[in-house]
Length: 68
Image 1 (cartoon, rainbow, N blue to C red):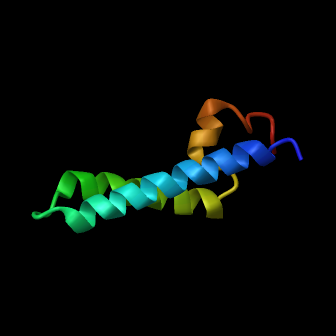
Image 2 (cartoon, rainbow, N blue to C red):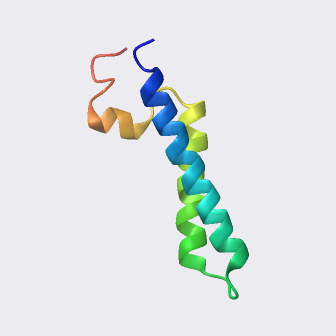
């Protein structure tokens, strides 16, 4: 499977970001709205990317430009 290594790297990056962000949110003494907002927006984008096949980001990059 040609994309197997890339999927593992992508999954590892997602795991690391989620783990460190949740650790930061739990350990912080005061609420940080900027960090929490960026993390929530990124998480919402990932969830939307799993649901939607033709996402705007992929269309802008041109990955699915000829796909109809």
